[in-house]
Length: 500
Image (cartoon, rainbow, N blue to C red; front, side):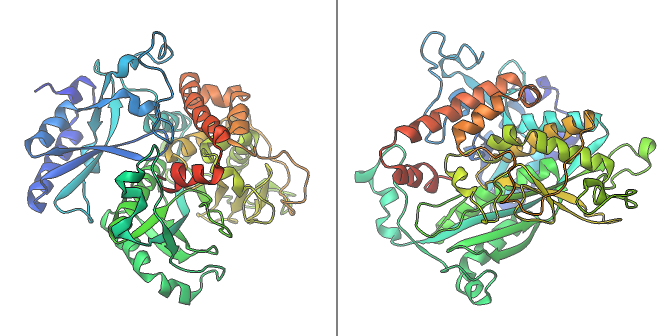
């Protein structure tokens, strides 16, 4: 059996030890099948299930996967004409729906708590000639983190994720599984709410929703995810999950696994979870993904502060006022903040990548409308939190929707912030009235957001011109089908509610 991992240059002692540990754990837990999973452009997991001896072989040789999996829009339609001459000329190696190889990271092996004798392992895609597939979104984040590391920093992230959970009304006659109603994409299940909403953190509502809350808790903890709290959010049937701070790559991996695991575990118990921003019902509240981020020093010899928060101020900046960035943030923190502001419109499509997500940007809705920052202000796009000597000093980006691909969301933040640091950009004064000021507006549609990205050559170059061209083509397919849809609400039901 060919040792593909060795050809790819990743078969070091640590990987070999992780392979041995994964196989031992499989044996100890009686695992007889393993899902080899990969995160697609839209942040959703896809997987092949391997049985018995094939697992050990595939950890060395990789798992074949059709390359068109990378070219799907959110309906699973292929956005490139791979069977026509020149149809995939912009993507060498993808012609004719050729094969890619999924190489697993054995250290990611887990036993799924909701599926009997089933393991799970995460991987990334490679070409058969042992070249990494640069369009893989996890690799996009890894490249961004390498750039950040060269500058002497790491990124720490905390996740604050809103979602909606519903009870499936009639599991025995679920329209989504009725063969007479099969379509592309299929129907969404008929559902009812788990709580009526409009009573933020109401203990009675938490008790009413106790069963799905307990399933989410047990699933997350069994997967080893650092879940810190579960809350009843303001909107009907809306919840929020908050996770402890981790390094950026771990945070992104956790987000992908949390969304997929929660949806599966809840579905088995008769519930439907959705991470779409605005479910297709009246009087709902939009869900957001608030990303807390701070840089940490990496080079102990150069800074003497390895691991310490690089955004934290040791002392108040001279003559600074509360609305000044350096009243709260270090000089590095101000430059990073200014970079996020400078590239906010271009990065919006990475933070809010669905047509549905743009309905969230409404006034006085705890969602941003303009490119502004505020000091502990939840109406601003960027909320700066912390004080002198506070090791938890951070920037919260409130632009994201919970359906975002976490690898792209985080990579866009790194590249925007680094540009601010490299150019030593200064941040404007903090806002006191985020919905009243006349400031640059966030894009109001997916199409506008894609255009804003293409207008920002700095962010395009940083994310990779080939990657951006690929992503824009796939996302324009999604936007175009929405514009052509006669029933926009039904589009949301089938495209997002039933799948995301």
